[in-house]
Image 1 (cartoon, helix red, strand yellow):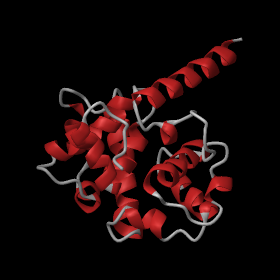
Image 2 (tube, helix red, strand yellow; image 1 turned 180 degrees about the vertical axis):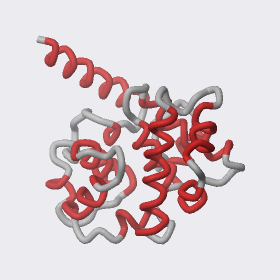
Image 3 (spheres, rainbow, N blue to C red; image 1 turned 135 degrees about the vertical axis):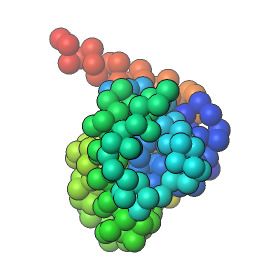
Image 4 (tube, one colour; image 1 turned 90 degrees about the vertical axis):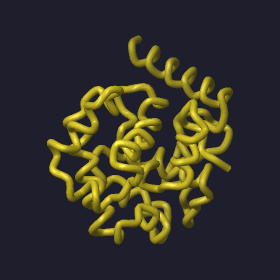
Length: 188
């Protein structure tokens, strides 16, 4: 099953097939529309010559990567800070996980370790780490022991709270409705 986080099938396929692309999309998923954040890895791959590789990105100087992030359409509304975070994320993947982003989750002994590993990535706080781990479990079958407990409440079935729950246009609408309700509650 392909992940459904953008409006383009080829972008969704990239997210499903390239673990680093999915991680970068999640990194960028803040302060811009979700669909734009998860489409950005496909544009980044294109701008890097058709390959998205942690070692290659980590070796780039931040100014060069910022320039790539800034090309129209920009990959994020804050290209410099996100290019810096992307470089740091790729350094971790290149050095700690043998340039294989999938190892970040495939080698985690349980859900708690997976969430802990994710929180060590730049731009991944506890909530984002739980959401990403829930996405892995719900949509990619990455289910280390106790993953649901470690990702609570995002790992629960039948909730539409985050990107972990988006599998169609309908579930995208449900997640957006939930987020709008949460924002409205916070304003009260």
